[in-house]
Image (cartoon, rainbow, N blue to C red; front, side):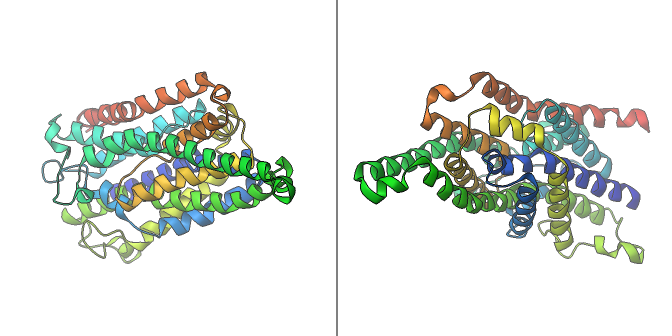
Length: 370
């Protein structure tokens, strides 16, 4: 049983690695596309800020580990979690190969729900749909933590992208009208230089926000696996080298070694290659300049941090993609390439059922394997 637990942790870290070159590419796509940073510099910045962001809280990890599946109704074994992670990894690799910035967050959620459904003999009650608290920010379940944010975060990203870009354009227009030194500063050369520096801050902000949300999802899976193994007695007599696996707290506590491992593996994945997705986000949807990158990153990071505060595992992909769309729309609605956007939207729509279907099928086949 200890071997199976270690396999779950390995599969979770592989998912985090894939998440690194799949989703972290989203967080650095704009700063690379605008040529403010070289790819190497962007990776270093993303890795450092991801790590800090991952250490900033565990609300999202707690949602994944205890807020979506009723562990009192279904036993989430190591085999089930491996199937859940495999479903998410396979879908991530498919969309990565196609250059589609789909959501690793929703792939993981889909994989977990599909695997749990199969393990619970397709009883829908094994999934926590909605738990309403007296304070709405404490509501739990798929409705409050997944479905509503999945719809609202892209809308918010698009709207905020339009608002921030519109505000910046209005300020520049006002400077032009003022004449003199203000008009000189508002020339494209100066604006590009100014926002080239400002984008270093917004890219760091984006990396921090990405770490605070995305890195936590795998933490939640590992914490769930360890909690389940601990309840089953698997950790009662651990060899000395495996003592680190013994949880420091209860189901809702995320041990520090889990946080550091996930953050570091994600950073490693970032360095390996997310260029297909960077190309889609940074070049195919709309041509970006530093001011556009600044507006998109600031919009997306704000959405991610807000969601992380409330324990909502939203998609970095959704927030940055729609923020870029909003920025492009504010510049000129006709510059958006609708065919690319359509492919991205389809990837979003299919992610949860596709990853969930793969995981469901794998769990359903487990009795045949044994």
